[in-house]
Every structure is written in C-alpha cells, then in structure tokens.
Amino acid sequence: MKKILLAALGTCVAFGAVTAADAAQGCGPGGHRGPYGHCRPNGGPVVVAPGGLIVGNYYHGRGYWDGNRYWHHRDRWHGGWRYR
Image 1 (cartoon, rainbow, N blue to C red):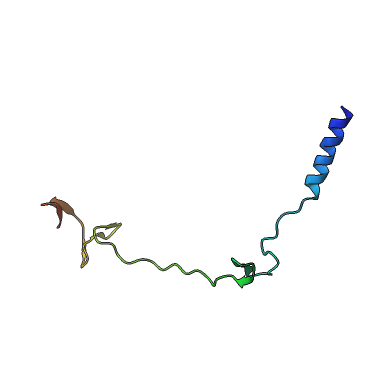
Image 2 (cartoon, rainbow, N blue to C red):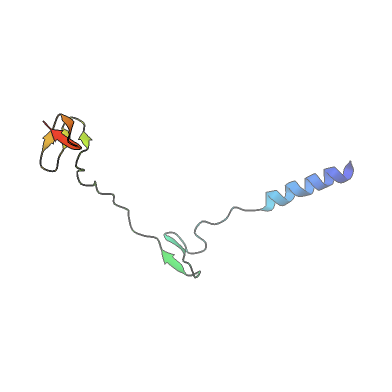
C-alpha cells in the first residue's frame, strides 16, 4: 500500500512540475516559428469585406436580387425563375 501511495505522490509531483508550452515559441510577441524553425512575424490585421450580391438570393427587407434590381416575388418558370 505504501508503494502505491508513493507512486501516486511521485506522479502528482511530476505533473505539477510540468509547465505549459510557450505559444510564442521564443519569437516574442507578434511572432511565430516558420516551417524551417525561423522566427516570422504574424500577419497584419485581418479585414473581412462584405461579398457582392448573389443572383437569386433573398435579402430581407429588399427581395430577390436578379442581377439588376430587387423583386419581391419569384415563381418557377420553364426550368428557371420568373421575377415579378
């Protein structure tokens, strides 16, 4: 029983001594390791621009976009769409 308690205590001490990995990997703030181990700067700010209008999509409060203007109603018509 004493051996099991000592083994458990040793395991707890070993796990307590382990530190978390450093995210910067020694490159400092704003840097990271590249594929060959060299320090590289992180990319600049990410800017997400809104995409263009999609033909056939319904936009709330406006209607369906057909490429030229908004339409409030659309129906199936000969394998496609008819806007009215």
